[in-house]
Image 1 (spheres, rainbow, N blue to C red):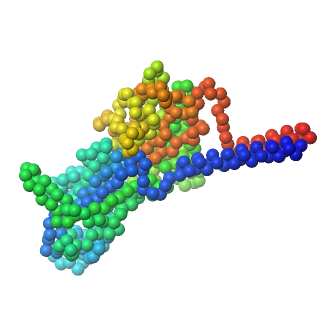
Image 2 (image 1 turned 90 degrees about the horizontal axis):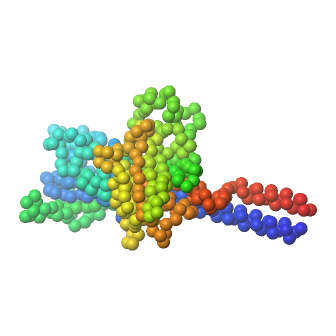
Image 3 (image 1 turned 180 degrees about the horizontal axis):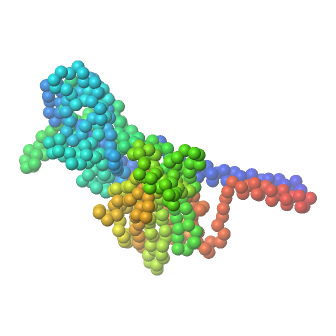
Length: 455
């Protein structure tokens, strides 16, 4: 009797330990690090370069250029906001291609009043359509900065600034401090300015090279943890060999607000939907369609067909935000069969190979003027495409969820994946093993009943 009971106790203890281990591993896999490091884009950053191109009686004129060296993360409307703190008592006399949001206290200046006298100015890009006499090259895009892979021609933004009450030589100029970059919200962390070799410029006729008087760089890196408290997208799965549709995890990006506070979400059948969308403020939280996951964007991966030498996948991106659309959107998908991608329909494709010899990551984005714009939630709030893969006999299988992606990013943010044990299984694999928090309790009750019956 004692032997049976002790054996059952040991089995239950092992099961509870195994369940705890699984929960720990799952929590680790869904944890988002605060470090600004992306394994799929390890060298990605935004570099801000200051080139002092000339001296003035009380300071200098500089051209400031922001380079987006991130492969797939971009800054969309309403655009970037750049800030810093002056090292001394500098002022901004004038700007081209951008402006500060506040002038500050310039009361001590008579006659010629500076553009900005704040110790910590905040700069924004000018809008398209700005008069030509206020523009310089690469300015006036409304703060939009595209990614390096998707649109390298528009992955830089520049403005010119005339600084006064500053040094007039390389030895007397002090670089600004405490740089901040918002895109338009938090997420980027900027390091200190570092003086580097002066930038060299080639004249239009390519017969002469000039160089800046002085150059310093600032590097800013992105952390999704700092950008938002909750995820912004999730992934759902389905397949032709299983009727089960695995939805996004419940409350993946938050839960529906059941309190009396308005604005949590709106049902797509609500009679107040139109008025809610029209009355939405630009600074208010997103107005989402009520779903179980409450994510603004869902990516659905459907294993559609199986051929002798190929297999086909359909990807659908759905927008659940009634107040926001996505221009120049992109996806980053990690799957081992991307090294044998044969054909892609209605999407652009570029392999991402941050590590030599490993080609399992793809960047996908829409075709220009066709589906590069993801509309707000509604009948038109989705884009889709199909991918055709060639099978590799040594690795291909539909078992154990192999046909589903390892991870998906939307606009540079990591999307919440369903737990692996929820993936659609092949019909001939038998009953799907399910491990839940209630299973150890049921095992204990079953053991007690067994022991009681045999007493």
